[in-house]
Figure (cartoon, rainbow, N blue to C red):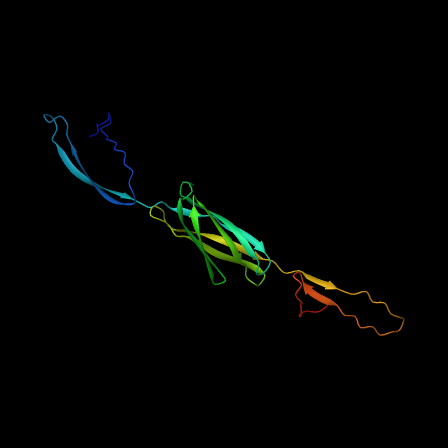
Length: 178
């Protein structure tokens, strides 16, 4: 039982989960002056919208990167749980969201230098709607190292100069011109 305030309103605090509810109520007032009223109303509790942060990472081809994301509700509060999913070069990565934070570890960068954009999807949860953010990856070019040995010879002699061309990881580079 709740009393009517000076404006003729009744406030009944209720914490409800997502869903539809029917509230039945009956007013009991001064029966000499007012009729008793019985009625019902429908209450609809909607899921809360969410937002996934947009994040970036950069490194060389085939390297592994770690990227941290946040997932907040429409009021800027961290969502308690759920999953984030991203697919990079055909490989799906899934991590748990805990208190609005999620970390993808060891995402393998594509093998070709360039800029890549991927959707990061939040699964949603009982009280929260799904949402999508973005992962921006930049794959940098690999450095090339050219070594030329010191050559000592006599005037007029024909000299073959052998140049070594390797990438920054020590792999031979067998294309291009020197």
